[in-house]
Image (cartoon, rainbow, N blue to C red; front, top):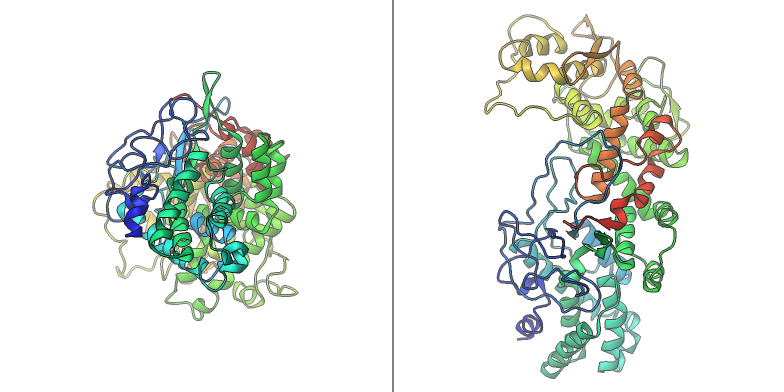
Length: 580
C-alpha cells in the first residue's frame, strides 16, 4: 500500500508510470520534444525539476507526474549519426537537453551520496546502450519500462540498506523517529540527489508522503520509502541542461552548471562544496574547477574511460588467440600497459595528440616486454623506450593491435577502419547485406596483405576497401597478438602504403606504422577529429561545432589532451543553449 501511495503523491517516481519517460532534446520553451516512440518526459509534458520562466526547469516546480510513451525491452537510445563536422569557424551552443544518467553515473551518484553503504546494495539497472561512436552517454537516451522497473529495484536495495544496521550512523536523529528528523534528512540528502535545494512545494509533498507512510508503519519504513521516491525521481535521474531564456538563447543556472561540471569531469555528482558554490549563484572560474576535478581520483578514472570507449582497448582482456601460447595470461597485462602509458604520457607529462600517436615509450609488465621482444622494464609497467623501428605511440600496443585482428591473423581492414573513423572522422559506406569470408586454403602461400589485396581489389569490395585497407597495411609488421615481425609465413612483410584523401587521391605515403603515425600527427583533420570525439564524450552528442575552440592549440602543441578536455568548460555550449 505504501508503494501505491508513493505513486499517488505527485507521481514522483519513474516506476509509477504506466509507461516510460523520454529524455533528450527540449524545445525553445524548455518543453521536451517527442521523438520516435521515445515518449515524453515524466510530468505531463513538463521536464523534471523546477518551474521557472516558461516551462523550463528552474527552481520551484512540482515533482513530475505521469505521462508519455515508452520503448520496451531496455534502456533504449537513438543512434547518433557517425559523421562529424570538422571544419568549424567557431564553437557554438547546441540544443537544450535533459540527459538521463548512465548506469555508471547512477552507481557513482549513489555511492558518492551514501558512501557508508557502498557494497551493501545492488545496482539492478541494465547496461547503458553504446552509440555507434563508442560512448554510452548519448544525450538522447530514453527511459524504458525495463529501466524504470530496475530503478525501483535499485532504489529499494539501497534504501533497505539505509534503514539497516548503519541507520543511526548515517542519520543520528533516527533514534528520535520523528518528522523533524525526516525533514533534516530530506533537506540534506534530497539536495544531493536533486543536485539543488528542493522547493518548498517539493519538500511538502515528500514530507506528506512520509507522514502517510508513518501512519501505516514505522519511522524506518517511512524513511525507506521516502528515500525510494527521491532516488526514483526524474529530478535525480535526469541532468537538466535546459537553462532559462537569455539574450535570444538560454543560459544554464548555477546548479545546472555545477552538475555538468561534476559529471563531465568526474562522472559523479557535485560535491557538497560545489553545491555550496552553486547555492551562492556564482561558481567562479569554470576552467579552474574542471582542472581541479580532473586531478581527483574520480577525474583521472573518468579521463581514462574516454580512451577505453574511444579505442576499445580493454576488450583485449576477453580475447584469445588460437596460435599464440599463453596469450590469455598476458592480455590483462596489455590493458594495464595502456592505462599506465596514458597516465604517464597524457596526465603526468601532460602530452597531446602528437604524443599519443608518436611517443617512443611504452609501459609493459616484465612478462609482456619479453613477449614483445622488448628490453625488460625496471619493474612491472615502468616506462621503457621502444626498440627503434618497432612502432610508436598508443596504436603500436598489444591492447589495440590484438583487439583489431582475427583470432589467427592480423586484420588490415579492422585496423584501417579505426584510423579511418576515429582519427580521420570519415564515415565508411554501408557494407553489403552479405559479406563473403576471406578466401583461405587455395594452396597458394600468401601473406595477410596479399590475401586482402587479392580479395578486395575486385568486384563491389574494392570501392569500400580502397578507402581504409591502405591505412591498415601500415600495421602489417604486427601480428594478431601485437608482436613485431619482419616475415609472415617465411615471406617479407610489406607495410608500405598511403593515406587516401576524401576524393581518393593520395594524401601522403608511408613505409610503416611509424611513418603513418608521424604523418597523421601533422594533419589538421586529425586534431579536428579528436576534438569532436572529446566533445561527444563530454556533451553526449556529436551535434556540429560544440567543442572546437582548442583545435589549433592542440595541433601546435601548446595544449595537451587533458587540458583540452578541461577547456570544454569554457566552450559556449557548456553554459549556453540555443533557443531551439
